[in-house]
Image (tube, rainbow, N blue to C red; front, side):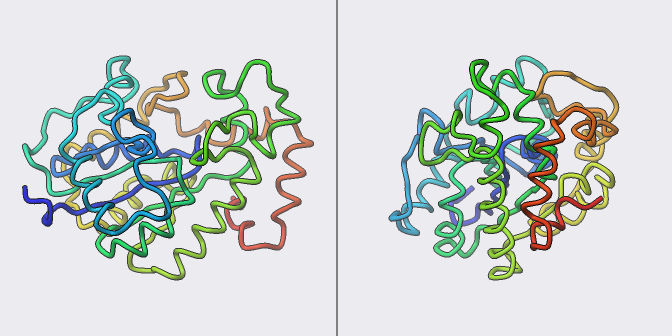
Amino acid sequence: MRDGEIQVGWISGMPRSGTTWLSQIFASSPDVRLKSCPLYSFEFKDALDEKSTARQWEKLFSDVYHTKSEFLDQEHLRKHGLVPRFEDKHESPRHLIIKSNRFHNLTPHIIELNTRVRFIYIVRHPCATIYSWLSNPREFPANANPLEEWKSGQCRKTGPGEFWGFDDWKKVTAQALLLGKQYPGRYRIVRYEDLVRDTLHYAHELFRFLGIPLEKQTLEFIEQSHSRHDEHKHSVFKNPELIEAWKEKLDMAIVEKCLGEIRGSELEQFAAG
């Protein structure tokens, strides 16, 4: 596969928004090669920034496509059964899908410089996003106070590419809405809750958006991902009925402040339903 023939799709979203599950839906396609968070990987950590050129981004896409590593290929998740191993794969897939819930500050530069790259941004109810983070012992520090950290997310920010907490949810989601208006043919927003409730419908839409055929292996994975529940926070196998668990478990003071801050704004649409 020549580099110029590789089609690049970029899946982004805040941490705990469903990026791993959505990216695995695409990874199930025989014609997709999925890579996770390149700029956070050992091989390409902080390789590019806001000053990088279109040519540098194109080289990164090519290098990422051809590089094998445990992190980029999510082998660390696969060996624990948290994501599946898809056996039906083309030797040289036409589509590179990059999944990243970091470096949202670079998105406007990437999409402006690289006209063939298409983005999918997945956004989850802010309260569900915050609850999923606060209740995850692998991502929320044990010595941190949820009531002090839920808004700023400062306890998890170790570099410029980190986005955590409600303030970042507002900032990144507002950016997504703006990019969706600026690049309607290349930037698509999908609500996590919609994807959970009608996965097949939205999968068909998103596959068409990226020009990828939706085949049997993808349909089988979608069914499997809903058919059993794995308590591990990084597993893609979840009971879809649990999408509203935050309503009973998240501190009501946090809920009221979250909903109050976005009431009457464009962001309120993602707290509906």
